[in-house]
Every structure is written in structure tokens, then in C-alpha cells.
Length: 192
Picture 1 (cartoon, rainbow, N blue to C red):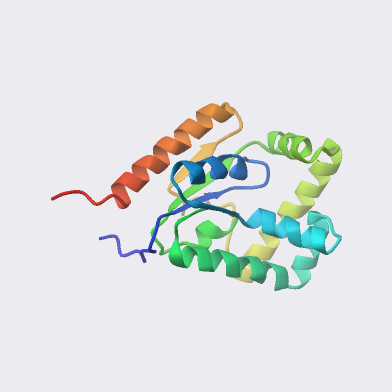
Picture 2: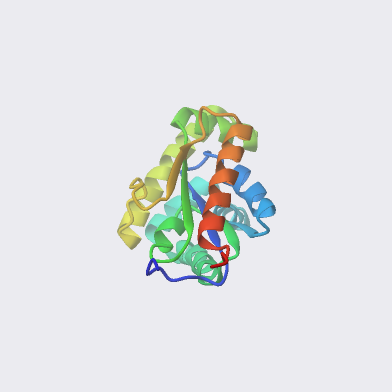
């Protein structure tokens, strides 16, 4: 036995910086494996909208007060308690240390990520570039200050995959294969 705390149901975590495709891949994985899909990034964007702010502005506010981060953390921690979820979240991998889960870090070059965000949000690329730099800088500082998490440290992940140079279909196929193998290895009861 691994010594990890085991939730009632499997936990699959997709993480990575903005624009790597977390939700693009997490939603179909959740459907494929009959798990709930939750995006903490969507929660953050909803909070920003409700407050009449951009995500960069909300990130700046979060540098001064942990109130909104704590709200998102609470959602993440409750999901990790029970499992049965594909979690699209920047910090879930860190919160899941010591909990049986499959942690996948997705990455892609900065320029590709910004083009994806600009296309998704129908916004000018220059605006997205400056906002993404500000947002990610804020997050790196905040998460180190609040939690001691270096979000650039990839050592805690079970898998790291670059989504920048493969087709969406290829990335999906790789992820489905990896998650299927994890579930079979860790969650399927085998006859002795």
C-alpha cells in the first residue's frame, strides 16, 4: 500500500498555466470516465465577472487579501475529500499531496498559450499577453507567499505533457490512455 490517503472515488487533476488546454481536455476526460468536471479557473472568472473586474484586476486584489483564493481553496479541498472528479485547477496538485490521485501537468509555450486565450475570449493578442504576464506573476508570488508553493516545480506530478506541438486529438488520446491505465492500476479490483 502506498500510504496515501484514499478518497472514496478517483481524482484526476489537470493543471498548468493559463491557455494550456486544461478545460479542453478535462471535460472530455470527465465524460469518458464518468467523473464530475470542476474548473477552479471558471470559479475565479465568475468571481471577477460578479465584481465587475478583469481576471488581472482580481489577481491584483488577491495579492492584498486572500479572501477569494480561500473561497476557491475551500471548493478544491472539499472535492479532494470525496473524489469522483476531474479537477481543472492550478493548485489542486499541491493540495492533493498525500492523497491518492493522478496529477497531470499540461504545458505549452507562452506564445501559444496567449494565442489560445485570445482566440477563446475573442480579445486582442497584445492585451492577452500583458494580462497573462501580470496574472501569472501575481499568482506565482501569491501562492509562494500564502502557501509556500512554487507552482513552477513539476516534481509532484505523475505526468507532464506539452500540449503546444501536438494536435488536440493526439493530446486527448495520450491523456485517455494514461488515465485509463491509472484507473485500472489503482482503482479496479483484481481477482486474486
